[in-house]
Image (tube, rainbow over all chains, first blue to last red):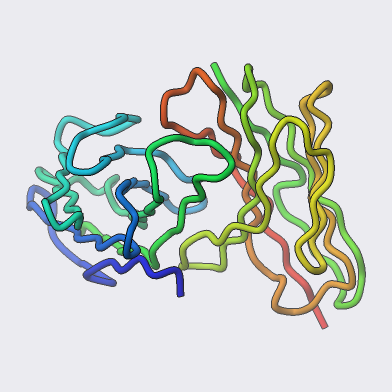
Amino acid sequence: DSGVTQTPKHLITATGQRVTLRCSPRSGDLSVYWYQQSLDQGLQFLIQYYNGEERAKGNILERFSAQQFPDLHSELNLSSLELGDSALYFCASSVSSGTSGSNEQFFGPGTRLTVL
Amino acid sequence: KNQVEQSPQSLIILEGKNCTLQCNYTVSPFSNLRWYKQDTGRGPVSLTIMTFSENTKSNGRYTATLDADTKQSSLHITASQLSDSASYICVVSDYNAGNMLTFGGGTRLMVKP
């Protein structure tokens, strides 16, 4: 158990809908990262928040948005869903914001999104 | 563009045997390289993190090597167990990437009895 929690575990919805994925980081971690992993694909970095502020943005679509709240939990909002958005969405957390070797990222169990 | 290439894409070995997974990267300037293990449908778990100055690091039966000159890394698994069946992902970060990591596509390992 990494200490990172994600809800829900599974989500099934229809095209055009909007969903919200939730992540609670490990106690003491200030950074939260969101990743997408499509079937048989590698992990794609979406976005990072550090202590409530957006810190880095990767290949995140305009239909997707995220935020980190004062209690440090984060939500990833996916709207106007398409079939191709079906994937595993992982949240990770780390103590600080950099990518140095000492700033290890701990991954949550993921949310499996299925868009029908 | 930073890239991380892993080989082979998939591998099947018998329980008890050793294997080596490869990772080549073009990330420059290099900061650190990580190997993660990802069980099917679960989040990745860190195995090792190596910086520029380290050329080998072990974690139990897992040993990672790094050659920063040739931009290659390998992950050697000794005396494989059924529980080693997973995807192994090589991840590289560089000083100029801000806070982003570059992920390889992974090697899917299956250990058979």
